[in-house]
Length: 303
Image (cartoon, rainbow, N blue to C red; front, side):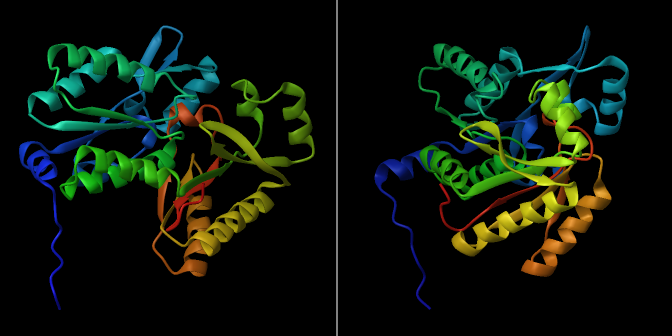
């Protein structure tokens, strides 16, 4: 069997020899420590504040967070500080490497805008620093998959532009669908009107939510959570039938058994391994415990 040899132009060879590409994301990707270590992914954390009490998202688990929410009310969340972002960027640049940052949607957080400020600060000190910033237009594992694809490209020795393109290309092939247990947290977080929440809960109407164009939107509404989960899985199967199968993960907030059952159903239908992961506090504060969802990407472009 002939060996395929990748032909590189001189500029690309020079870039590969002179610097590696590192990856930076934020805590709302909810990537496990194992994945981050394996793919050398850096991470900055968003912050949660209950009045004067502030904590980094990575320093609090869901059980404690929702107990605090009952006692102290709705917290606010904020992007990583410009100082934290600057320190991550400058440490990469001073190693002689380039950096690809992939963050949650700019319509959901100021993280991307703050990272642009940090980048400009780095460029004032190092004019030739190479830093690219990607708006994932989503969060959770839809963001996570884009980060992973960028990290795999970086590990394979691709150029900074190729690494950035790997993230952007995956965004076109991915989808995130999720279902809240009820509408109370959407109401508390201001994502749905009080009357709508009252009527929805009264008639057990559950929305299937998704993220499109950088914002959370309602894909459809279904009676009862059980029916909503089935409709969510059907949508995923339709996408896979049309665009091919990439990877799938089941996501949840404090409903591990339910998430495992959904994973089993998907495994039965598709005969593939399915991971189950947590949705953390910054995203979870808007939808609440009992939320279950799926994130996946396809072989072909969906959008």
